[in-house]
Length: 300
Image (cartoon, rainbow, N blue to C red):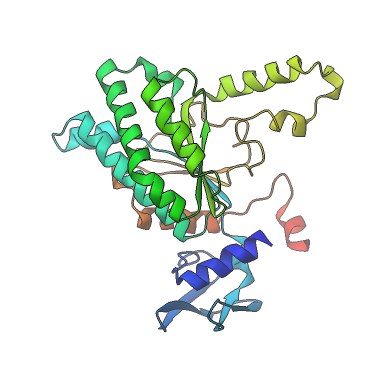
């Protein structure tokens, strides 16, 4: 049902779905009518009729519903290198990175992606120069102040993955205010991985289970998941990392066990909604088997 609502919302909003332009699943064109982008499907398989809020029928292949990720996690890497290439300061790079983050949050909202997790500040980042760390926190505080009204208006709920208690006071205050003001959002959840360590998250979950007095033989995966920051959310379907690095860097190690990993060479400030669409198109062409064979999947 969530997938159907996700697609119906996309059609009503007139969003041009990027998928299958070159993927093997199908190819399609677009007809523009009454301000809406309506897909005209060629060489398609089964077709389902959809009705948008204005009563117009939209014909979309079921496969499109299947291929929309529910959760995208992004490692926003390369702000400093982007700035260095342009003769700018690292601070300029981080400011450009904030602008890119703002665009991608809204692009995911427009595409009705229910969950987005952004790796904003790792525990390892405390080792950077003090002035840079201070600037990062200042930019985060300003971002939250500037964007919270837009998040509320768009039904976006903010959550934090990480140790908030050890952050500077002004950052904690800004985060707590944004968490409180966006708590009623139901259209999308944006998780900020802030002061986050994947290994520490696992240790935290273990400690909490031990504190409950649970015997080792009684520990289950569901019980463990309930102690993670991401409790109640689906695992990321797609992980995106910019700036050419090919590693996860202690980012959601438990939750990304079956995620599709998309690495691109461009630095984070250059990652636009069009680049997001390319990542989604790549994801749409992946066969997610979860340990099964292709033949088994086709029988489902």
